[in-house]
Structures are given as structure tokens and as C-alpha cells.
Amino acid sequence: MSSPETPPNAANPQGRASLPAPANAVDSYRSAILDIAEAMDAISPEISPSYRERLMRLHGSLSELPVASHTLAQSLDDTRQALHEILRDFAGKARHHNQVLARDLNQTLDMMARTEDSRSVQYVERLVDFADQVETAIRAGDLQRLERQTSDLRGFAESIELHSHDAFARLREKLTEIQHRLHEAELLATLDPLTGVANRRELDRELASRVGGNQEFCILLFDLDGFKAVNDHFGHLCGDEVLKQVAARLSGQVRARDFVCRWGGDEFVAILACEQAHAETRSRQIAARLNGPYRIAGEGHEIRVDVAVSVGLAQYIPGESVINLFRRVDESMYRHKDTAPSG
Figure 1 (cartoon, helix red, strand yellow):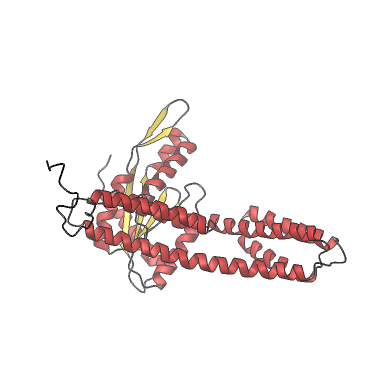
Figure 2 (figure 1 turned 135 degrees about the horizontal axis):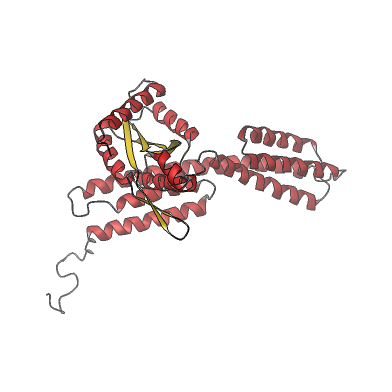
């Protein structure tokens, strides 16, 4: 034990603060990521949810780093690059979102302000009724109809006159609310309503982006073997809870630059940004994590559900069609099922 009189920096003659232990450094990094997520919510709450999800996956991956390993530096560098990519994407999208929102809303409101000395309040009432129709379309989730009606709303605003400041303020509030609801509807249109992960429509966009950018990636297809028996034996509500937990486990096993969606039924797709050799290793690790048991809260008791997962895998070949890519993934899945030990 060192003497109490030993100066704090006696072992560091240059007076530099000692570097924190690796574990403390990782904990500080994880804490910083949580602070960044909160800052994103404050900066642009309309677009932050998807970026917060990516940050939470990155935050979770840091807890699995081999702190005592010589690979820690490389692992931290990988996460730093992923964090940089998230922040760059967020900055670009937030800037674009704010510009579009400000431009469209200000143009509409400016047109209304110029005609504030309207001859008849009836125009206002008609426009408010029209806005209510847009809100009804938002609740229906019909994005194409929303776009048409929002465009018509702006055109109608050009032809009306407003009678009073009160009517103008009421309409301005209504239009602002519509803008927010439209964004919420667009966000919900990308998610699977049961599990909260991305849906098939968002998968199509993600694939198109990665193919168009000539990115290297692999497709993993996860299938829950015997899932029908879960619904038959325990009921569909229990089956739905299993699917939610599977989606949560799968989302927690991928990196921020990867992608997860519900393919349909009891099948999930993951896109891993890596080559096939690494994806094969990761697929086995993820499948092991997705295998049961799952514990579902029943009426006064807990239900244990055991499910096994089969996985198919294929790396994208530049130039091939998405149809062919998924055909190879399916073939890989069936080979896995054929070679899996019988239960």
C-alpha cells in the first residue's frame, strides 16, 4: 500500500490525469450515448424515435464488449464509427425535415395572412371542415390520400379569405397539428403494429438503399419452428406475446448499422452489414439467443413457452435480384431444417 503522504501524481511526473480503467471508460461511453439520445429527442422529437432505437442497440452492444481483451480498442473504434454514422444521418434528416416543415407551413400561413381581411367567415368554416377530413384520413392511415388532401388543402387556402385574427389563429393551430399527425402516420406506416419492429414495406426501402449504394450485406431469415402449436395450445394472445419477445431479443442482438423487420407471421428478417463468414457466426449466436424459453404472464400464473428457431442465410451478390436473393435464403433455411436434430 502506498504511503498517505505520496502525492496523487507521484507516479505521473508530468501531472497528467491517469486514464480510466477500460470498464470505466466503456461505462462513460454508454452514459454519453444515453445523453445523446435525450438530446436528439429535444432537438427533433418528430424524427428521433428511429435514431433512439439505433442508439439503444449500440448502447446494449457496448455491455458485451470484451473489456479485458486486446480487441477492445478495435471494438470501441467500430462503435465510434457506428455512432458517427447515426449522428450524421440524424443531422441530415433533421435539417431536411425542419426545412420542409418550415417551408410548407410558412407558405400556407403567409397566404392566409395576406387575406386576413376576408369578407366571409364561411370560408374559414369550410376550410376547418376540410382539415377535419384530412384528420379522418390520418386516422385511416391512407398516406396517398393524405398527400392528395394536404395538397388540396394548400390550394384551397390560396382561394379563401380570412375574417378575423381568431379564425386565423384557430386555422394555424389546426394546420400545425395536421403536420405533426401526418408525420406520425408516416412513421407508423413503417412499423409492424404487433412487435414494433420494421415491416415489409420498410424492408423494401432498406434493401433498395443498400443495393443502390453497393453495400455489402447478408440476409438472415429466422423462422419459429412449431409456432402454430403455441397458438393452438396456449391461445393467440400468448402467441402474440412470444412474437413481441422474439422481436425484442432479435433487436437487442444486432448493431446500430444492421436492420430488423418482421417478415410475416412467425418469420423475422435481419440485415447484417458484413460478409457471409461473419454472418454465419452471428446467425448461430443470434439463433441460440432466440431459442426458448419464453415466459408469458398468464391469469395468476406464468406460462413457459419453448420454441426453437431455424435460420437461413445468404450474402447479397452485386447485380442479383432481390427475388433471387430471398430464394437462396429460403433454400438455406430448408437445409437448416433438414439437418436440425429432431426433437
